[in-house]
Image (cartoon, rainbow, N blue to C red):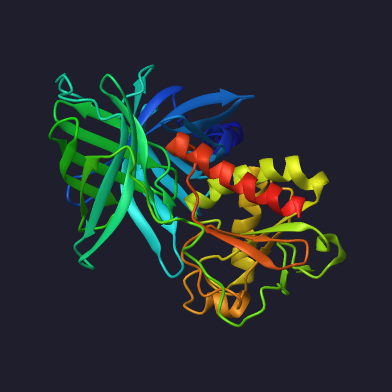
Length: 418
């Protein structure tokens, strides 16, 4: 009798042991995910699951970009995935090793944005949009003048579309005054254009009708869970351009261009612009946010700049404006951002939220405003502001990215030569 009771306890302990619980695992290979919108215009994305050193991870794919996602917890029939940037995550349940369903959660300042999602394994094929095998009626490769219309505000926004089409495959981006929409990927199916992008921050989907090789009409732009899409249209224009990003922000009249400030770094240590390490140096002040996708692209480039020009007399200071003024919350996000991108220059935390209407008055009163993030301030050896650049066009824009980098380098070398 005692032996029977002991046997029951042994079996029960084995059953309740975490090691004995069945654990699903994401099957290796290509996956196709969809963020579910109420209007049925789901935002499609792709990722590739792999295993390294016995650990499951995946690459989030958008055109030529691969974002490594390796913060993943598998527990019974559930999986919890923290995305590397932008304070967002997936929480899902396994339907099988080749299908999961759950929610994408993006943490905002005062609430969480929650969207249902599902993902299925597509094997070795990277499938984003299914085509009906219609031959594209035109090739849209090139530069386009774009007009977006927001029905909520009844305002138009000018943009530039840069597209590269190979057969039915379409990649590219839209460039706006505040930066680009990063890597977009999709198809041209007959007269239909479809592009989407998802990096944990941006969750966007564009559709339109291609009239011919010169005009696009009937466009819709779906963003996140937003109910009302924006509309857009475009015409081909090799000379399409936006206002000079070096003239979008000005200094306040009558205010000294000489900088003087002190803010805490991610460890809570005050760092002053007046410290000896910045004296007689060309200093780049990068106004960023860990929530900002364009800031990611600029930070990657800033790392390159710092490696190349530090020994020539250039310093970089990041100043992060986060979703709230809560320092402890901000430091976690900023520190993760810095670690992921291997940032070696100091990043300070502004004591105001990014959307505070007085953010510039409370931090950098020399500026009239902060029009967008990132904004980049170029300071000469005297500590005086010489140039202010708004926005950043990243590698998803191709040639525009190379032009953007050249602008920065020319400014830096000019300041070093003075």
